[in-house]
Length: 291
Ligand code: MF3
Ligand code: CO
Figure 1 (tube, rainbow, N blue to C red):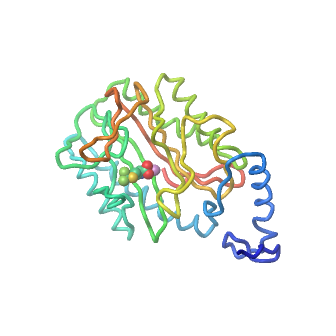
Figure 2 (cartoon, rainbow, N blue to C red):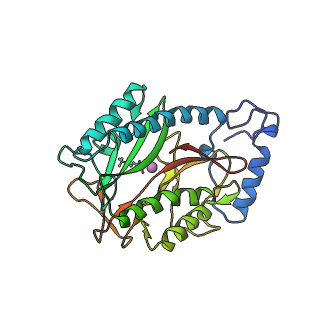
Figure 3 (cartoon, helix red, strand yellow):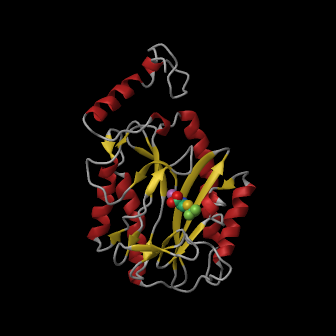
């Protein structure tokens, strides 16, 4: 049994402000979308300003890790050296790599080269070669708050075709971001990403998506980039999630490596690209938390 929240009681969000001056109107609005049959976010997905501030601190470390990788990454380097850079930068700032020992993942970062779609495991035996494209996907825990972003790097001389793929994968994030607005739907963002990627002749991976993030590594909602406008979860201020579409030069089909249980490859061996940003839904649009 739960007591009904009085209008003069402190708001459920933890702001310390009276409910009537904080989330009362917000709750009413959510209720009306719910009654109209839409998927609406649970209260646990709404971050208050204090939590956002802590997550931003985590994101600073997250971005510093990718900056550090960007300074050093080069042909001849092994992906385990990238892992070491991420680990050392993370702990230098008092943080913890979120992937390390996450459901058995053995490393501090995911490194996904060429036809690896995501979740590549850094290794001493994997050496960056001229012409490679690589996604470095980094996630960070600082004081219990989570941040997650990924950047791509190109090694030596890459083909014009590959450069285009990498550029479209990056641009897709900002095409999606433009559609992130409160009281609209995640599918608005998903369709914008999908339409954009398809207009360049690439396919969007369907089986792996983005996720809510901040208080946990992976929160609801699961974020699809093959969704349709007006569908999926309602976006409201205080929600945080990732935009991280994986795009393939060829077919959208992927498979998981049976031996390591993690690495995801394109089924047709075509190249795949992915960047990732973490965003906050605000009162009038969206803000990037980590990129
Ligand atoms: N940053 C990746 C994601 O959330 C991490 C996946 S879990 C891992 O999409 F264990 F594979 F790293
Ligand atoms: Co992620």
